[in-house]
Image 1 (tube, rainbow, N blue to C red):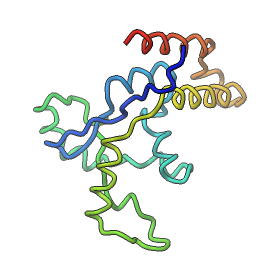
Image 2 (spheres, helix red, strand yellow):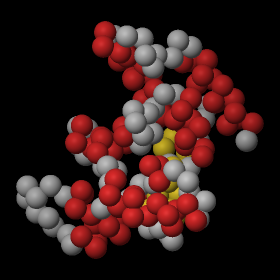
Image 3 (cartoon, one colour):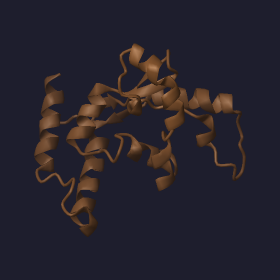
Image 4 (cartoon, rainbow, N blue to C red):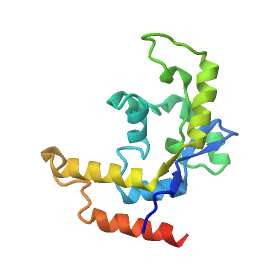
Length: 163
């Protein structure tokens, strides 16, 4: 059963709040595969930031989320911690630039995140990598290891084969 062509949309844009939330579909797969540190998109941010830990902070915008909290609740988004705000200053490091205005960076990253889809195979490979890493690191102490990861993957494949 191949799901190579199956792609999961990662983010939904909320225009009234000018921010994103993860899709229920992505949340479900990420949860089953243990693709979360404190957020199911931390690992994606690391890849966007040249695969380093700086990227894990790409949505650490607590003050900005607080400002949106009441409006978000009024729109049915009760956990503002799961709202992701694109701040253009995060997406430039000043080393040899910036080469674009904050407005262009904001529009670009809003477009990119709004269209971001990841294949099941990419998510499965990431889960395998993380699971192997956890098994081989003492400091995890067994935490987060999925003993039957291939079974979980086959279950997800089966769910998507039905749809």
